[in-house]
Amino acid sequence: VAVDIVHDATLMWLVAAWAGSGAVSGAWVFVQHGIPRARELSLDWLRHRWHFSWRSLVASSSSAAVALVGSSLMAIVSGPVAVAAVRAALLLERPSTTVQTAFATSAATDIAREHSDNAGLLRHQRRTMMASIAVAAINMAVLLVIPDSVGKILLGHVWHIVQPLLLVVGFHVAAIAAQSGVRAALMGRRQIQSVMVVDITGTVLSIVGLVVGAALADAQGAMWGGVVGQTITAAIWWVVLVRHLTQHESTPQPEPADTAVI
Picture (tube, rainbow, N blue to C red):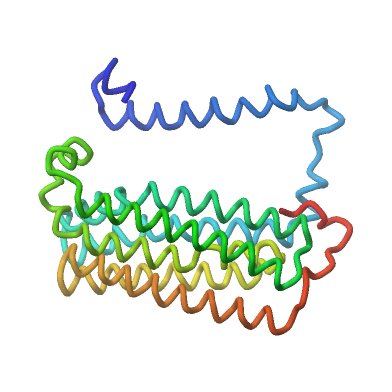
């Protein structure tokens, strides 16, 4: 908004505003905790937790591959209009997914710190999932009643190609909400190997769904393919969680160096 007010809203300025606000947020850490002294700068923390860190990096980075690889392949099998429609449609679910991520991060931290037993873990998981479903329902309701005037303000000239996708966006948000809390529960239990495998599997399923759907029915097909991919991923998450619960009654005791992993 600030860029649009004081300058032409070109891509360069929008990216600069995004990067600049992130840099300011990062600098605020030093305001809160001070600047570390030279003797406090060490890679020991990372080295002691590397077995966890690299898997977490791979798992978290895999989601970016959906946007990059999926969009590139969609452009080949369908066309740039379909890519623009899908990217714009996914933008409308960002409020829901952002809140879901915040809920999941909080739940994972609480589970890890409390060393919750299975009952406690499921309480955190249910609370996270119910909150995420509520947010997803609100997101879906807003999408279904949003007037054209507001849609054009949000998405400009691509609004008319996004309108037919609003219902499927709601289903996509619901499929993501069904996974909410499950990943957090496994992260809280330090099951990073399982998390990494499912994240990569979900990435592959999402890309395949987008590309196959785009080849069959352009943007509409791509979005429905994404829903199928997310639904299968949700089922996989639940299978992995149930299997973990049958094998472990509480958080596995970490090594001394792992006590602050989460």
